[in-house]
Image (tube, rainbow, N blue to C red; front, side):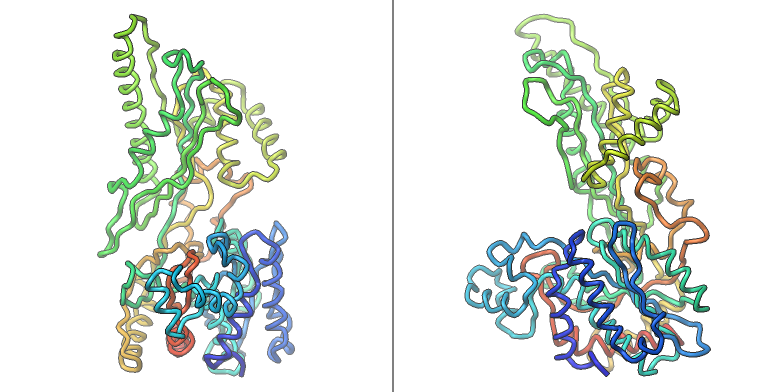
Length: 535
C-alpha cells in the first residue's frame, strides 16, 4: 500500500502543497487533475474507472470524487476536504517559497529573528512542516488519501467516498455544486451515507492552547450588508444634504464587536460581529459629498434562527438611523451660532432588500425592475459577489431616490448555515469510543466541540429551505448567480463529524503542521473512527 508511513504521507503532502492552488487560480484546476491521475494509477481504479470522477463546475473548475465500494455493502462514509488555499501575499519576502516547504524552512532558519517566538521554537524542533496549505487543509486531505488506500485493501466493512472541492476559502461554490452530484452518486451506486467525516485541522482556542478537539458540527456565517443612501450636496453647504459616510460610520459603531449578537450554546460562544468591508461608492474626487456607502459584516451563528437575526439587524439599522438624525440635529444647533437658518428635516428610512424591491416595482413596474437587474447581470464583468450585490442594491435605490435617505439591509454570499450532529446517536457513539481509544492508546484527552470555529463545507450537509427564507429573500444574488441546494431533490441530510490534523497559524505566513501527530497518530484515529461510523 501507498501513503501509510510518516515519510510517504509527508512526501504526498509536499506534492499537494507545491500546487499553489489559491482559490480562483488555474493551479486550482491543475491540482484537481493531479489528484485524479494520482488515484487513477491505483489498481482499484484501473478495475473500476467509473468510480473516480472529475466533475466540471459551471466556471470551468473541478471537484473530485473517488468511491471505493465493497460488494453488497451500502453503508458509506463520506471523506470531505477542500484543496484550495488562501493567497500567499502575506509571506512578504518569502512569498516565492510559500508553497515550497523545504526551501521555505531553509530560508526561515537563516532568518529566524523574523519569526515569532513560538514559530521559531517549532521550526528548530524539526517536527513541523511550514508552508501555505500545510495545515489548512492539505494535511487532512493527505490522510484521507491514506484511508482511501486502506479501503482499496479491504480494511473497512463498508464504502468510502472521497469528495474534495475547490473554492472553500471564498464562496464554497465547489461544495454547493457537489451536493446534488453526491445525491446522484448515492442513488447510482445504491449507497447509504451514514456520516460525513471532514478533515479540517484542530483550531487553537487561544495561542498555546494545549487542548485537542473533535468537532460534531460547524459554525454558521451570515454576511449582512448595509447600503446607506444619503443626500448629495456641495461640501460648502453640508447641511443641505446627508453624508452617507456619516450614516455608515454610525452603523459600524453600533455593530462592530457588539456582544448582543454573541450566542452561547453548551459552553461555546460565537465571537461578536466584525466589519469585513466598508467603503463609499464615490469613484472620483470632487467637492460633492458621498451619498452612497456600504458596509458588510461577518456575523457567526449557532442556534439563532434566520428570522431572529434578521430582526436584530433591522433593529440595529433603525437605531443607527435615529442616532444619525440626532447627531445632525445637534450639529445643526451648534452651527446655528454662526447664523440662523432653517434646517432640513432628515428622516432616515430603514428597509430590507425585499421591501426595496417591492418599492421599486411600485414606482416603475415589475418588468422595468427585472430589465434593470438583468442588464446589470449581463454586464457584470469581473465584479465579485460582494461588489455585485452592492451594485444590484444601488440600481434599485436609484429608482427610489425620493425615499432617501435610507439604510437597506441585504445579504451577500457566502452563506454558511450552522450545522450540528451533537445529538446524533452514531456521532455520539463514535466520539465516545474514539475518546476512549485515544486515551488508552496515546494518552490523548479529546474535547468535543459542537461547532468547528473556522467555517467549513460541512454546513451544506444539513440544509433546510424553510430556515433560510429571511436570508434568501433579501439576498440580491439568490437565484441570480448564487444558489443553495435546498430543493428536496438535491438536499442532503447527513450526520457530520470533523477529525483533523494538528497545526498552528492557519491563514498566516507562519502556517505549519505538526508531523508526529498528523502523520503518526491521526491515521490510526481516523481508521478507528471510520470503523465506528460504518459499524
